[in-house]
Amino acid sequence: MQALNRIKAARPSLFWFATEAGRAVTELGINYSYRLLHSTESEGDGHPVVVLPGFMAGAQSTQLLRNHLKKHNYYVYDWGLGRNYGKVTYMEKLVKRVESIHQEHGEPVSLIGWSLGGVFAREIAKERPDLVRQVITMGSPFQGVKESNYLSWLHDLLFSGRSIDEEQAAYLHQLPIPASVPTTAIYSKEDGVVPWEMCMEQVETDIHQNIQVRGSHLGFGVNPAVYTIITDRLRLHKDNWEHFQPSGSLENLLFFPSL
Image (cartoon, rainbow, N blue to C red; front, side, top):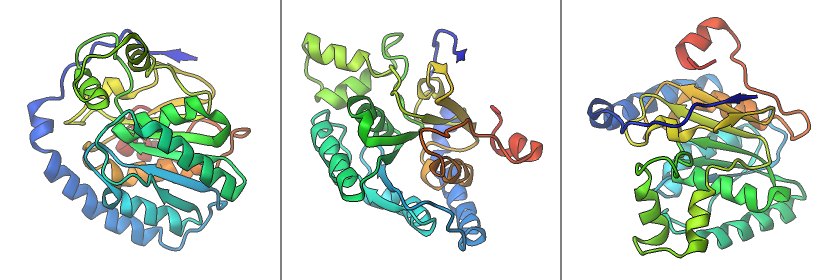
């Protein structure tokens, strides 16, 4: 079991922020080649997967990722709520949607969340772990809420900038608590939007792993290294889940520096 030190996060540098769009476009171009090389793979077991978009994004932002997973033989769903405006009231609808998909397929659902979508994915799994096979987050800021003011914007999103009561404050402060299902937290130290330290599980356990990739925040949904992690993770069940390991030292150095 590996614990992180007390979180002391700085805001992303101006350089990483200013180059977000350009880097994401580059990752999109690399993604095209990656999908061509992996176009014939279909090793998935056909279980259902729900992909949740980031703040202010909708189904279109996760289309390439969902298409990729469909080609790998999974039943893939958008989160079904249109554009993500970050409302805590989404939770009831999301739980019902996952419950409906679970009932339709008769098996637990894997949840993949990008940025704020990953925050919701973890909360669904914490509320209804019986419905969830595993959670994968991509640049999702669920950590450090108690430690600094860096996530005050998260409060403003979830509660529309209004003052909150004790129950709502407790909800916000319990966000760092991990789900009881296998969870992979993907983060990038080149993230120009969210402090990368906020996107990691505080403690790595047998069912919780943090993985660093190289890339932008806006590019998580097209990053080939992220695709490699996701397709590897989805093949696992709760009972055989294990930490991700790159296939070789060169791949490790180039794409997964934390491993």
